[in-house]
Image 1 (cartoon, rainbow, N blue to C red):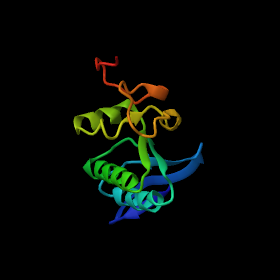
Image 2: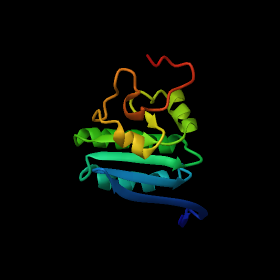
Image 3: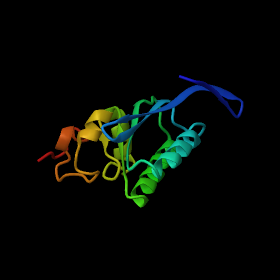
Length: 144
């Protein structure tokens, strides 16, 4: 992980990209907050035009604030405007954050980048959300 210095603060944060099965996987490592959200925003902006399928892997993100959520929503908007798809992968605690923010329907969280890619529905949720491993579900949520 790279040690960055922004606004006099030093912290660990890294973004890496890789290709897998025709998708671009963006791996984020470190806190995604007001200090680092602009870095992810810039990376997603560069990818939106050239890569129709993007998965943002947040498994290395221990903290996500409103700035980070904003970048994810804008990334989705950019992807859709360009005819592409953006999916998220990461731990269930971040899926819960998306649920609390009312974003789980538009930004479902998959347990892994591989599960997000394997969900072959082109980015549209199936009726039950369980296709290809499916996104995380909340306890007690109807999965029929």
